[in-house]
Amino acid sequence: MRSTRVNNIASSIVSICLLFQFQVAYATSVQLPTETRVYIETKQALIGKGDQVTEGQFVNAAVWRDVVVNGNVLIAAGAPVIAKVDTLKKRQIAGVKGEMSIGAYETVSVDGQKIQLSGGYHKEGKSRMALSITLGVLFILPIFIPGKAAELPTGTIFDAYVDNNWNVELGDARVARKVDLSYMSSDLSAELLYAKLEAQEKPEFFEFEIRTAESALTEFVINRVNDKPISPVELKNISERNEDGERVINAQVKIKTLLKVFAKGINTIEIASEQGGQRTAAKLIVDIQI
Image 1 (tube, rainbow, N blue to C red):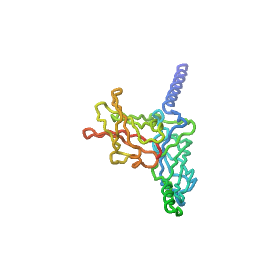
Image 2 (cartoon, rainbow, N blue to C red):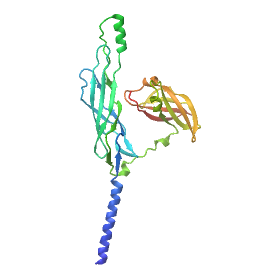
Image 3 (cartoon, rainbow, N blue to C red):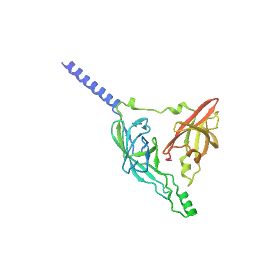
Image 4 (cartoon, rainbow, N blue to C red):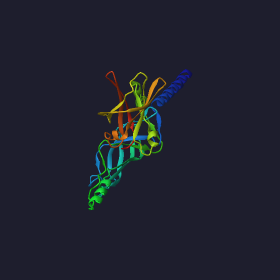
């Protein structure tokens, strides 16, 4: 009898331990911090003229890329986003441009929680004010040239931010966990030096810091924007140095040159180098709303 009771107690302890181990392995919670950036993509075109868009209208939108914290996907790409047109100013005569802003309010985490968001997109239409004033002065006539309506095409990308801290349950952490090893597949990496832009009142150049192997070529072009091929845009090297077995190059390109091929919203570019017929590229986000 005593032996049976001991065995039952031992079995219970083992079961509790196994259950505890199961919960540790599968009930993983990760904090999604406040102010975490979430990239959002519009799924419909918005044209701010006539009655095509109205203030307060909901906008079909989704998360553009996974939101990852410590290697864990907490909000998945494609998750629906509640967004709406916050303000709309229609174009007017005398070249007054139209304006439109989109607010992002809510999305869904991988465990089904409704995650509150703040921020969004504000885009002004192209102004013709200077042209209108010039014509009015020259011809002394009433000005009836309309400004251009604010317009956002399908696929416009903008950013918003997580409101408050959220604890997200991952379930099977081994499935939900992701580790980004893409940097190992290329000898080339690059980043846009945002501090250089912010330090200038009217910046003329995008400056990049590019890292590559010491033996690699140091001639670079931008030949893909938003995953589409473009005519190569050459980068001008302004400094080079060796650091930790790598070649570090600072290179720049005129902002106006890239604006010609940028889409509205946030853009991605690929900085590439070709050596021996083999293309090596680094892809990065230009986190500036155009």
